[in-house]
Length: 284
Length: 279
Image 1 (tube, chains in turn yellow, cyan):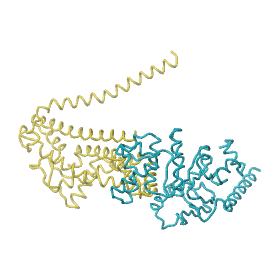
Image 2 (spheres, chains in turn purple, green):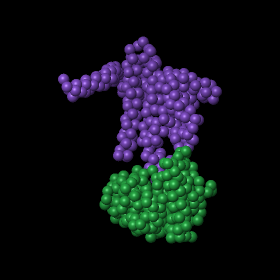
Image 3 (tube, helix red, strand yellow):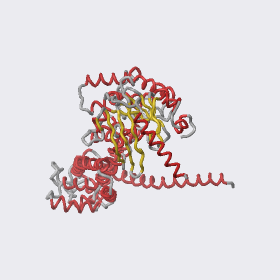
Image 4 (cartoon, one colour):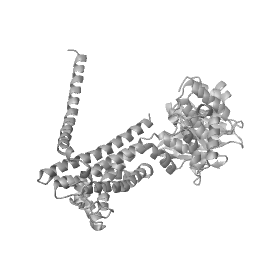
């Protein structure tokens, strides 16, 4: 066998290895989703989405949990999006490059890796106890905002860095101030990347359970929250609660709720992918 | 031995700088830009080693020299684009219309309305053609739609682009060809109504036909504007410029009428460079 043949053979081997690895991930996912679908798809109807929780499995719905999730999602967006983007703009454009900003940078990256339950404990102490917000939607949203801020900051900075410096030069050369350049050129040009980061981080937030349990989200809430200071539940907690019940009916409910939660995150990821593609096209 | 030679070369160059200051043909009260003994550092590296020169209004001045000779750095002093570069520091005086532009109270934004710039690679904003030209006006707070419309049209006409784009002003600027993009960048600069236009190798990324168009344009524009162009293309310098300055290793080696530089340069080094023997 000569060298070329050996190389070709190696090439084939690597290809097979790659396909195998891809398939392992895919198959596991398909089995998991298939299992959930078999268990839960029949349970989903309009009533399941609009019914309040009940002691009887077949009468229970996800209305309060879904509404809680939507509240949490909305408030978290309102809090985390402006704060995260503003922090990123400061770090990227205004902060003087030095030891302090390097320290900040490292710590923000580290924060992205801190276990979410730690954020829950922080939220419990700061928002629930010190600020007396109680186990409210607001306390939960603030906690989740802390959780996703590092992700938003890193994603925003990366997409701002990706804007060609020639755009910045052109804007400055026309007499634009720093703020005008950021607002009119840098942020619009990086908006696709920023949105992608924000949506991906939110789809992580919507699936978070641990920090919300620590903050005091309830498994059983009789009504959907009507203002940010009310108690709440969210889909993952509802699922967790149903799975831990012995009756088979609740297992079906859990599967059905998982399908709804998956749909929500898939849709959010879909929107993120759409914006990313649109944004990439812009520069080609 | 080598050291001695270096010293003698330096002396030679310093003397030449002195000569230029004395030279009446290039100096006068009507200088648009007047540079006095300017030095620039990036950190420890000295990029400009004490240059003095005067630039005449309504003329085209070409900066030539090998890569890394400091000509782009020098050009970017005139609209203070070096201010953002890490480690940049400078000494000396640069006067435009008689006022020192490096004084503390000078607003760089105001300066850049007076001194426009066109870059090496066409860099239109990822927006519509109209938005590109209107941008410089909008950031000044001008909101009168009619005024903006008329200035956009005027600028596009000046840049010889109007006929090609007048029906799709709303189209993305990135859909234009490279040459059109560069003329758009010139239009964008003209819309702000500067009196000086700096061009940093504006045709180096363009094909010969687009290059010829830009050169024609430069020739037309010099009636109203003072143009300084950095170029690597010797023929381009000789075709379009009235004055030529030859830079080498952060020094101004020779500065004179373009005709003189290209026919009987005073310095051997200049002659070697323009005849292609080095650089």
